Length: 299
Length: 277
Image (cartoon, rainbow over all chains, first blue to last red; front, side):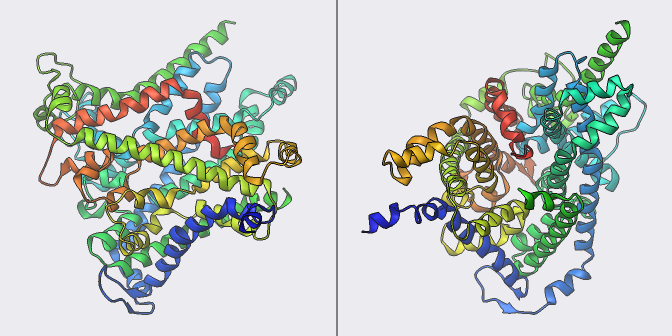
């Protein structure tokens, strides 16, 4: 009887998706709701929690260190967008051209950095951007007569190191995204345009860029998400969560500091909810501007 | 023709320069792994190629010294294999449920899948930490494996893939009297094989390089994975560069070999999300 029930065509789909329902409820929905709840409480691991209303959020608004973290994450995210969308797109178009020699080799070597863990990549970059005269970047700069720079002690130079790390790890991956997008553009379009006398530049701006839009939206979405949630890169570069004057502190870094290092879970949960709100607002705005919702409805 | 040749050389030149800068960090770490750790502290990480200070000492230490490196290494290998196998099997099963059936609540559940992909995992770090603590799962591998076992991105990819398989296969299975589960196991899984490779690599890479969540959960040195172990070599009180550098370098090697052998699958796996099905 039970066997017939489980084997029926009506019940089978629920059996198939059951693991997802369980994981979603236990490890996603419950923690997320718990996060909301905690953000209105004063919580420490192993202690009774107390309701404090909006106190955590009110405190956040006046918390200079949190605002610093917010600004750092936002600037980092915007700068990664500026670097990691146009350049990979350009590389993809060039590498895809018929005039390219050694295409497979370049594709592979551009992708190499993505294989390293943040821990390893962060360690290498931390050492490369070391403040000693003989450290890689400084010894390179000295060729141009530039004095050694204490990269990880200054706001701007610290960000240079952070962005160098991000650019190094993600250029190749984003390039591959654009390459797979380029594959979907039929060659005929370019041939027709060439017959009509369109220059290479016109072909790029009028055919390639518009037809790469779905890929660009995808890359944009994941870059916004990754930029705002960045933490370990900073943790590795500064060998911990404490950078001088918090120049490398990010939103998630602050969440980690408050929640794990200071056992102030309620306040940290409020930081998380703010991050959630920001990513949701950006994602929804961005998706509705790009008209992705409409497309989803049709299919 | 001459013009074309110039463009070719120019293009190659640009890419060679960019490629040079991309490969320098690898070269630097490879070079440093042959130098004493003290040199690194004194002169910094650089490209000086000085045979008089270079030796295989670090590698000898890596393979024969008393430290936990290979303990961490095999923990990582073990966890990666377990995570890949479980995540693939379970995500594929869930994806089949979504792709092959119409049922009440399907749209709602699928929106849940998309929601997981849209919310940064980092937000869940603290409540998950609390939950893990309450469940008594701290310092266990279960706490690392379970939350990721039905991976949203993997489900999404498999669903697209199964949607492309002709529905006649399922209908034919039913005519032959196979059960709903028999159809999935005997008819669908064999057809899905090509998609497993790309997802195995995507999930394998994520698992091998996974850091923050395992770092929060695991507290015993013997249970550390490789990234955590390497991270603990950097302390505010001084760094174990001898092991850190050669260990970092060596951690790239297995994945590099896999990449060179299965390059196509790596690229398919990494770009799977961007291709609209």
